[in-house]
Length: 213
Ligand SMILES: [Zn+2]
View (cartoon, rainbow, N blue to C red):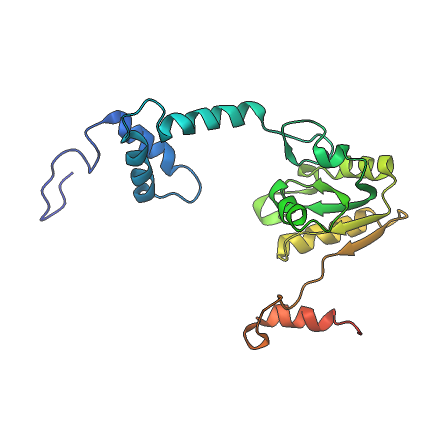
């Protein structure tokens, strides 16, 4: 195809190597990578002559992770052993369960180190617009887990978004008749945040959930 005023060299701006093109295309399908970054990465990966270069290391790491990584059948955390370390630990309080949307959401809690209860990963949030309905999420498994562990407090730690709110309300309704304390993470002014620059919704929530001290 010739664009007016442009010389058509017939290769559509692609490398003269179908193998490199394939690598660039595979990389650019990864989240957050456009063609430009994918090209830079591809050239970095193939541009080493040594036998154990970054490409070989990457291939080995991906293969290993694909083989080893699984989800805990009890809580949904990413783990290599099932049940995971947190579910297995005798030192964790099984009567307290923290509900998160994704396995990644467990990490900040564990890094901070103050939480001694256990977790349950929903694997997503209810979103009628995106077609995520209640039957797509493991609410039944959660109910079984609450029963089995004699859970007394369920802490809802979901995103502050329409989907997060919808899911939190659904959980509240679903387990309303259980002898269970339902709590949610507080929302408000971030530590170190300047009041003048806080958005209206955050300010309104901080005001709504103000407490005496
Ligand atoms: Zn687990």
